[in-house]
Length: 419
View 1 (cartoon, rainbow, N blue to C red):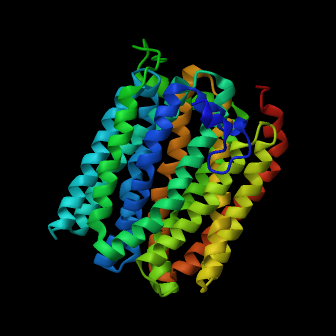
View 2 (tube, one colour; view 1 turned 90 degrees about the horizontal axis):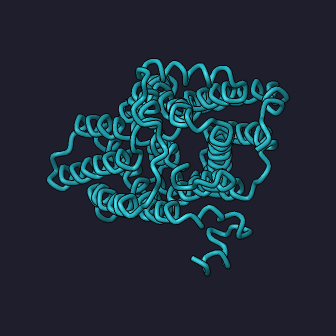
C-alpha cells in the first residue's frame, strides 16, 4: 500500500484525502465495495426500466420503490439496537448473501421469460428487509474497521466517493447492457459482484466492539437511543432535515424512466445518461467532502448543498432538453450527496460509541425509511398531475425546508463539540 499513498485516487488532491485506507480491514472493505457497488447500480437501472417496460405505469414505479424501502422504516431502528450488541461482520455476511441470491433469482426469471411485476415487488420487499438490517450494521461497522477516530470522517467521505463513483459508472453500463442483452444480464452481474464483498468480509481481522448480551430489553435500548438523539440538539435537527429531504426530494429518482422515455423521448441509454449525471454530481460532491477537515463548517455546507439539490431538481423538472437536463442533474446529485454525507459525518463524529448503532440506524431510517412513503405519495400525485409538476413541487418543498434549517445554524454550530 506504500505506493498507493504517493498518488491520488479518483483525482483527490492529497494523501490526506485517502488516509483511512491505511487501515487494513477498511482497505479490504473498500476494494470489495469497489467491485460490488457498480453492479448494484447496473441492477437499479435495469429494474426501473423493466418495471416501466412491463407496466407503462409511473404509479408502479413508485410502488416498487415503496416496496424496496419501506422495510427500512419498520426494521432499521430495531436493527440498530442489535448493531450495538452482536457481531457486525457476521450479520453483514448474511445480508450480503441474501441480496446476492435475490439478484440471481431475478436474473433466472428474466432469462426464462417468466418475470412478472409481482415477482419484482416481492423481490424488492425481501431485498429491502436485508438492506434494513445491513445499513445500520454497515455504518456502525466503520468504527471496527477504522479504530482511529481521526480517520473516521475521511472513511465516511471515501465511502460516499466509492458509492457515487459506482452511481456514475454503473447506470451508463446498465443502459448499454439493457439495450444490447436485456435486463437479465444486469441482474446476473450484480448477483456475482456480491462475491467480492463477501470475500473481503471473510478476510478481515476486526476486533468485535459491541456490548454483548445487554441486561436491558430491546425496547428499553431503542427508547434510550431515541432519547439520546432527541436531547442532542444537532442530532435532532439533522435527522429532521434528512427526513424532510428523503420524504419529498429523493423519490424523484424513481421517475427517471418516465423522464427518459416520455419527457426526453429517449431509450434505456438515455436513462443511463440521466442516472449517470446524478452520479457524476454526487461523485464530485463526495470528493469535495473527502478534502474537508473542519467539523464547524459542515452545518453551512449542509444548507448550501440542500439549496443546490432543491434548485437543481426544480430546474430539471421543467427541462425538455437532454443536455440541459444532464447539467441540472449534476447539480442535483452534488447537492444530494453532500447534504446526506455531511449529515452522516456530523452524526458519526459526535455520537457515543455505545449509542452508535442506534443513532446511525435512526439516520438510516430517516434516509431510506421515509423515501418509500414519498415514492408512494409522489407516484400517486404523478398519475394525476404528471411527473414534471410533481417533481417541481417536491423541489420547492425541499427548498423551503432548507431555509428553515438555515435559521437553526447558530444553535447547531454552538452545540457541536470540539473533536
